[in-house]
Length: 230
Image 1 (spheres, rainbow, N blue to C red):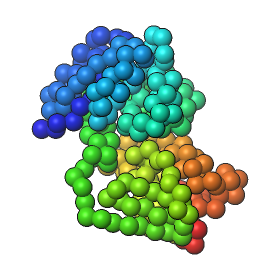
Image 2 (tube, rainbow, N blue to C red):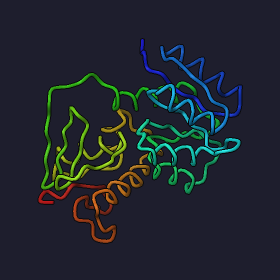
Image 3 (cartoon, rainbow, N blue to C red):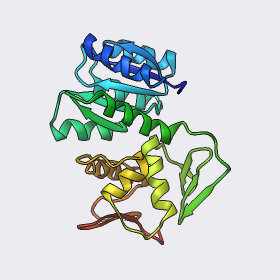
Image 4 (cartoon, rainbow, N blue to C red):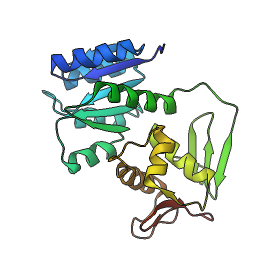
C-alpha cells in the first residue's frame, strides 16, 4: 500500500468521487479541490506527491494553476485531466511541466496506472550516489540534480528522467516509444508524440537552437539521441 498523497482537482463532484475511490483502493491518500484557487492552497499546504489537475476550472483555470506553481519553483508532478482533445491544449500543458495528459472520458484504472508510473519515477527509495556525464551535462542521480557547464538546470521529474536516459546512452538513437517506456514505465499507444514536447522543453533549458540543436539531435524517421561529444 502506498503512503503517497494525491491532490485531485476537478469541479465535477462525480469525477472527484470516482477518482478518489480508485486511488484510495490503490492505497493512496486523497485530498480534493474544486477550483483553481483552492488547488493552489492545497498544493502549498498539503505538499502532495502528485496532482491530477483538470484544465477547465472556475476562477483560475488548470493551465494557470500549473503556470503559477512552476513559477514558484514547485516541481510537483502533474497529470492533466480534461475534456479538451485539441493538441494545442495538450502541448501547452506539457510545456508548463505536466508529466502526463488524460482526456475525458477516461478509464479510472488507466489513470491509476499513470499515477503509479509517474510516482515510480519521482518517489523511489534513495539509491547509491550515481554521477552521469556527457560532455558538459552532469547528472547527480541520487540528489536529482542536473547541471550544464556547472549551471543548475530546473527540470521537471519527467525531463530529468528523459535526460538521464539520453546521458546514460550518448550517441544511441531512441524511438519515441522507447523513450516513453523508459521514463514512464509503460509506453501508452497514442501518447508517444508527447515526447516531442518534452524534448522541446529540454532543448530550451539546455540552450539549444531548435533549428540547429547542439545537444539533443533529431534522427528523422526514427527518434532522438544525445550527441556523444556534446
